[in-house]
Image (cartoon, rainbow over all chains, first blue to last red; front, top):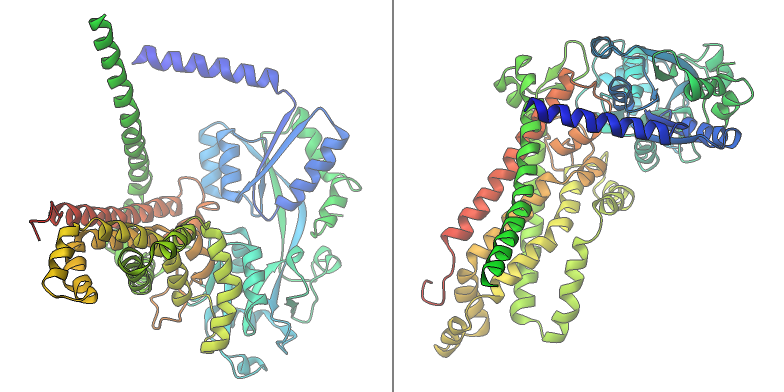
Length: 272
Length: 297
């Protein structure tokens, strides 16, 4: 048994050496679907500047990305939330020190169907709607119709921000429809006259009507000055302080006219 | 020479044994991981609170891991889809096996089977973009993403399974039985109802149960069209959140080896037990009521 596991170790080690030798210029990016559009565009631009580097980008969710950093199966993990205490503990136990880099801001915008007459909601009104306390549009100045509340599934980074900034730790009522992605929320609201939902800034389109929150419009400027109340930082995590190709990529991401321009192109709010 | 041939025979036997063994080994491995990753949640909640707890708030602080609404949703969606798919599937099978002319059958049967080759994400998309707004308009319900829509889409998916297996079962009823029935003066319709269907009942039941077990485990469709509200529905037009949808939606973001992650695996265990139960029933019925020749009716 002991002999066997030793043999396996040796084989794995050889395989590992071989792959690192043959693919020295490989960069793996994995994680949040919210950060995915940024990572994809950045990877394309990065590969144009460094043609000998092969960057592969995949989604899978913030949790999966951070898990991959801890397991060492990725170089960069995208995350739409900060790392959690439990994940840090697990990482430290395995001798890994994840380092966060804030790469962009994202606004979360409450949206309704374009035919809905509502234009503005206060944070308290949003909270009451998602708590299930207000369930008819007429209570907040709309038509006499039941509100169809659309939320994100509870483990998404977007939901976490919503829970923190709008719900203030109270629970979204069980009758809310939960959709699995920003795109699905956008689709569901666009197809339902009396729905309300929330999506990332980059998912706004002509089939959705963005609402102002406490009278403030969700724009890049308002997010940067923190006038708009529902915004968050998007992260990229590296395993320890980045070196080599990973460092090049992070530097590229933070560069005001390279990476940060791509952030704006992808529909998010650049850092500066 | 003879010895060599025997040796070759033995080797081939082993090779086939290994192939057969691989799938069993894989099943066992998956089961092992499912249980290993699911059990730890019961250090956090009791089995009773997990199965019968009414609230599913896996990420709040303190979390609630009650999957009762998810189990109810899964069962309701399966039962409702069966209510739509069984008449459709079985009647199509009877028509194809007994009534349709060969030419109609040649065209219709592959068409029904083609329905099975539609990827579930396509059916889900259809339900989300076409059926949901339609239901909203016609039934004036708040949302078209609901129990009924999901059942309808799942019925589309289980009809081919039910129809194909039922058709085989009906076609394998010994011709002597039908001949005898017709010879006694029964009409075609009477023969179908009194002789053919009772004789193929075990096959029909197997077909129905396999169709239902497909529906209960189906993920993509329920994720897209069931609405996703983790509550016990009060009407057929309420949104629901079946178990597979919950697992698929949350697994990607759940912290690795956190309580939420364990709870999702435990939900997977419950789901697995349901499909296992369905398969056992199917197996039991098809063995117990197996039609052997024409004499056992």
